Image (tube, rainbow, N blue to C red; front, top):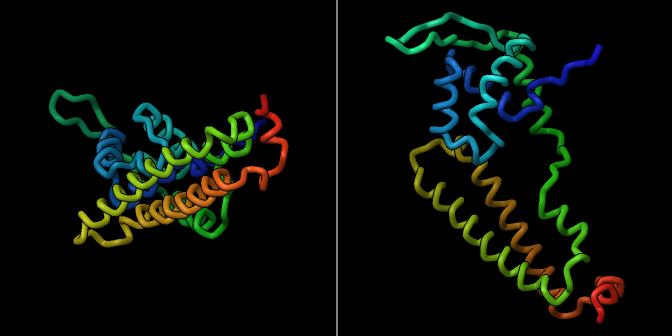
Length: 197
């Protein structure tokens, strides 16, 4: 018999369970909350996945149906709440995620690993485009934080984190671009030879 993967390894399931800690809700209400809180900025969220995640959390025993309600002519909606084991597992999973670095597969890192398919002559211009895009992203992160001075900073912490990542990537892009422009041979001969006529 196959062992089921813990649904809390899925970011959407983690967020849904965390939202249900606030108060019992039905999936439609959870969807509105995810959209209202702009959840897609931190997780890969598709509305169609929400009901599947609720089912997975129920099967795992992390949430349970509290009651079913009907509002006028609308279909019945089941309201869910976390179970005690769900609350405990959520706290345990959060401790793991905060304390233990995990490998995150980023597209830019993958592209750098096979950078040699592009010629050294074209890469600096591409890195400049990336630098400009990163500058826009950094400005957006700063604007969001500045526009919400009355919000407790704990609710904006992912913006601060993302800004730090963007700024670190900007420093890398600047130094890598400068290195290629000044002397690409410091990266070895293979890249140059691969693109020699």
